[in-house]
Structures are given as C-alpha cells and as structure tokens.
Amino acid sequence: MLEDIIIVGIVMAVTEILKHLLKRWLNEDLVTQLLPLIVLALAGGLNVLNAKVFAPDVPFTEALSQGLTLGAIAGGVYSLGKAA
Image (cartoon, rainbow, N blue to C red):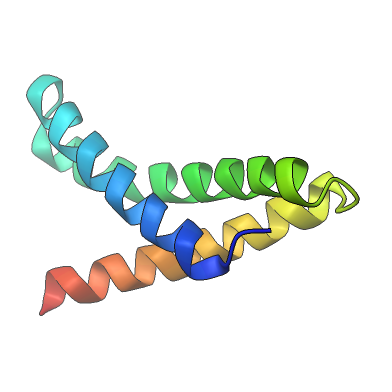
C-alpha cells in the first residue's frame, strides 16, 4: 500500500482544487461547511482504492476506517495551515 502521507497529500491537493471549483457555483460559506465532508469522503475512498490495488487482502471496512482516520489527519493539517 502507499504510505499514509501520500494519501494525505493527495487529499489536500484535490481538496484545494475542488474548493476552487465549488466556489464558482456555490456560496463560499457553504463550501467552507462542505470541505470537512469532502476531505473525509475523499480520504476514505482513496484509501479503499489504495488497499484494493496494492493490498487486496485488506478488508474493505479496515481500509475505509484507516482512510477516515487519514481524512481527519488531513482535515487537521489543512485547518492548521489556514490558521497560520
């Protein structure tokens, strides 16, 4: 499987792209409220895909659980960067 930091980095990069795209069509306050859900869903999905491609013996629920944990980490890192 890919390292956790790679998944977190990809999630942060894709979140930034999605944020700028969503701001074109949605209110900025709504986008700000949706971002944590996007981060969690993206991290969960990417980690499940990661597990299926590189470690097919890992159960779906374990990969999803780890992905949601990585999403929480990515959300925390993202929030720290915004606060600085």
